[in-house]
Length: 276
Image (tube, rainbow, N blue to C red; front, top):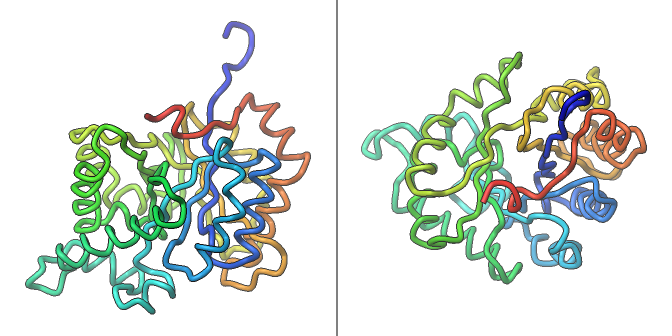
């Protein structure tokens, strides 16, 4: 586009749908306001069946996918969950050395897909992972085999936790190093679509960061078709990321966010329209 900046298409995906009522309500509100184009559901949460009703009128507007879970309190309560560090380590260890058992991992992924589909009455539009577990060794390998078998030619797209080119912090570099290249390579071989880059990465515990400023910087540099994750929640939320959730919700709902999108020539799109 000569003389002006070319428009870039970006998928804005809210993670953690159904983790709590305030988070689900915030995501539904933002989707209705057309400030999101995707969300990922935590189907092990007892809230998933009832909270899904908040999204059913938005089927034509946003992608709804599975937030594959091995590390939340819900996963731990169901017996397969562990801390992030344990899951990362066990995903690369051989089974005989205490690594994740392939049969058990396969069964759990199938269980979460079944839980999603039984409520949503459709396959997920996309799949990602709580704390990026979709990229980890045994989980990644089992997931790709299941998707190839289960969905054939109509595959959900996968999130790849790899920042766009350019400067990034240590969190982004670690995420990229832990399985992203293997995920892209193996998914491509199986003709499973992937999002090319992930933005929206920052320290959710650092209350000194200004989310509006971060968003402005992300939108200024993201390449076309980037997936930008977020974690919004209403002011009543009380989890470990409460401050960041509220800051994200307020900014995404604000006129300032709409102005940022316009000024930086970014259009929100569904991943199912650009990746598959």
